[in-house]
Image 1 (cartoon, rainbow, N blue to C red):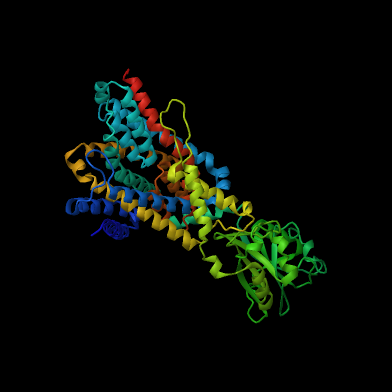
Image 2: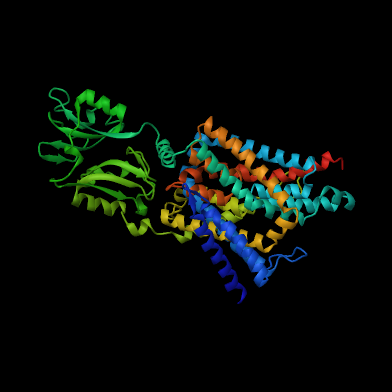
Amino acid sequence: MSTIPFLTLAISIAAVLGILLGEVRYRGIGLGIGGVLFSGILVGHFSHEWFGLTIRTAEGLTTAEGSILGYVQEFGLILFVYAIGVQVGPSFFSSLRSMGAKLVGWVLVIIVMGCSIAMILHFIGIVKIDAMVGMYSGAITNTPALGAANQMIIDMRAVLDPGVADELGFDSFVVPSAYAMAYPFGVCGILLTMILIRIIFRVNIEEAGRQYLESKVKGPRIETANITVSEGHFAGQELEDVPGVREELVVCSRIKRGEDLIVPHLQTKLEAGDVLHFVGPKSELEKVANAIGTMVQSAFTTTTRGTNKVVQRIVVTKRDVIGKELGDLHLEERFDLAVSRLIRAGVQFLPSHHMKLQFGDYLNVIGTKESIAAAEKAIGNSSVELHKVAMLPLFIGVILGILLGSIPIPVSGVPAPMKLGVAGGPLVMAILLSRFGAPLTGNRLRWSMPAAGLSALREIGITLFLSIVGICAGANGFWETLTNGPGLTWVWCGLLVTFIPLFTVGFLAYKFSKVNYLVLCGMIAGSQTDPPALAFANGLYSNPEASSLGYATVYPITMFLRILSPQVMIIIAVLAAGV
């Protein structure tokens, strides 16, 4: 079998076995997409033993098979992180203002603790410098850190005396070997941390998801109330005179008058006995009831049965209205309908005239079938557009992300410049474009993506990435190094570097900082810049926004410090040796 079909078959087998392994659960807990990593190791091992699959030669050169797998692995990673950036971009900056400092502070503690543990293991003689930085990079599952560490090992060996270099440990072949040993179990350490915190605190995932969604809404929760206009109160006055209506603190979505159901307008004159259906915060609804009449439990206004009015949701898909303020559409005047709610990403908002519409927003409206049909033409309401993935913005974003990730960031005293790389560049660019891309392109390009498209992009990308990481580790002698070499030592050292900082900070952040569990899982994955762990966290709840947002909030600063940290560790170790 030729190379391409063989590698495709190996990747597919690893993906199938890993997905099946990830579906195995005990008391609701399983590996999730992380199972693909371990099936990949198995497939890689037997592909090497039975079919001679080789990723690197004995001289350390990459084979043709290794180059192909390396490309597909990086491309999968690009797709995964870009999808994550598009998903969290619209709410990223508001999240950064509200909880960014808290999350970044905890991540700094994780990084300092991890570096300290790795250096202690070196100074007490368990690992040499090359194994220390390789094991550290694998334990934090950060490939750019591995590249920076390996390059500095090469640069330092070139300027040191050969005997001193061998004694301290400056072998560039040891660094990736230690990385390969620590990486799979580093992923396990992250997943174990998330699972243990969930068990210890008996976290209810559905409750955590609900709390996160509620926290996105600025102000108190939206409720509804039916209020009867009393004689002598507001009878004869216009609806806009009701406290809170003109200020848009409450919305009146319909009025029951006798047997008729009326679509209200600001100039609608109220009559005694009218039952008004209001939407708004509980405190404002109570003010309205005290001012105009009595709050009742009547169900008259909650149903349109027997009337010519219907309640329907219209989704914003038309390019011309995206970015416009809701008030600019003049829906009440043009189509004689009322808007009671705006639903964005599953969260309900009280509509206001100054609220700017985004693609995929749902407007909850009431009116006649004819008026709603006319409004649909103005707003879009196209299921085809809603589920269509725009390919042009996707690949423009990938191009810009790769270019951003390739920009070198020089650091004084460090031989190799730092970069965001193929993981950081596309992620940052996707966040920026999904938030600012539409207005910058005059709303001609849609930088957001439908939920189904995002899900497919994420799952395909992470499955390719994980399966190939596992295959490369298995084919590079993972089992031999683990059983007959220093691999087991590197594994245990890596687990210490991974687990102790993550569990300590995770416990403290959830217990004392009251960080939402789903956001915490994303932060933990982001502190290791680990896509497999993020995929696991995303699978905990039906809406992966909370974990993705926690990941993206800490990712940029984490990537910078993770690349810098092994280089600083090497400098400290060399200075401590008195060289």
